[in-house]
Image 1 (tube, rainbow, N blue to C red):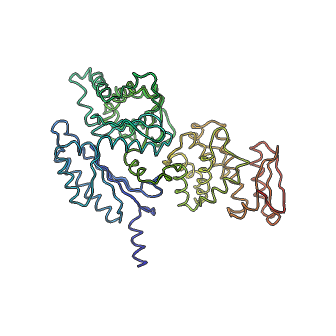
Image 2: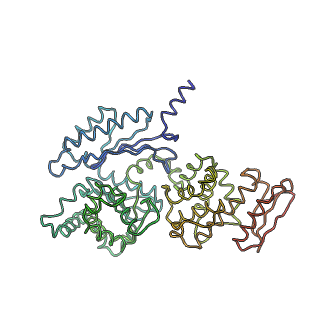
Image 3: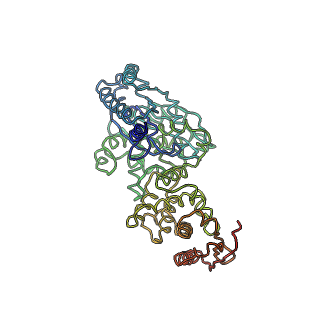
Length: 513
């Protein structure tokens, strides 16, 4: 029985991480399987595979799913079903969106899905909009504005504010349908298309620019074509980060991006790194749609989100207390825990260093705690590759709930924890010197905390670090006075120097907190 359990555990894992949930998303453009592990508040993607079936490509002309598209989709879906069975994953959610719900032969396709053991749910346009909005709220708990989820068959729009959403609607403006709006004259295609899109958006009740009192907030863009647009913009700006999630532009920058892409040729875009041929073909039309959205919605800024419908499905099933958890801390805690860092110890070390190196004008205590967990996890990496790897974690791993400045501060704290006080150029491009200096102090204080007693919980109980007027003071219980060795003295001097303080060590009978 024990052997059988171990075998089951192995079968249900990918790369050593437990595979807990799977979502099959049957869209108008792609059919995708995503397997998730880790904490569902900030899930880890263990498998992400798609088939570009273009199920919705003939909906406008025939009202039906094309036979070849269905055959290609079913080939991929049979593979997905077999993979999930072999992995032993039982928690599987299958959803179908615009193409299947709009097609006359959609019910036939759904019957084929049931025949291979899947339990598909065809969701309405309003439900699709709400799920995408919930995904955005999960990623940006303070989200305020409008979510625009662009799929192959439809565009979903919904308002978000205060963790809630309203006014969900679905417009037939997916990437597969945008060419219908171009008109017959190639020279005036862009203008005609924009006029047509404007009309559809107004008809859907989204002419918010006409209301000067409206507080429209941000426009959150969800969907693969929007993400490709973000990749293009990031390259144009020389943006040092690789993940489009959370990348943002002000209204003028978004308008400039939309204008440039609307005038571009698909063939030229196909040569761009990290932009697929399929996305390159859709970008000029999507850019005209973005122009119409900017004109009608008048957002203050545009934010690109990699979280949408699938993450909304995950978020919806979370208990209320878990939804309220900080996504950055949840993700970093799960990641660091897999690398031998106990969140409880990291929390105690963050508390121990609080008086000497708090979050002040640039960071936050949540960011400082995340930096503490990440820095402690980095100590499990071999010394010769530790710092480059840990800095890459900070800058390029898909953390949720942190911006570019926050990532740079994570990187600076992790580096200082390893006594590396010079940073790569991309770190300095993302944050001011003052912000980086604050993070350096976090890292140096943590270095002192972990090296004082080799990360033992006991060393934190018999010591205290505090600031007293112009002095950095380390209090040590007499029973552990020998902990103050040469390495500790070096760490004290280094931290005190960065704080602009003198330093001393007080040996006391007992530590009073």
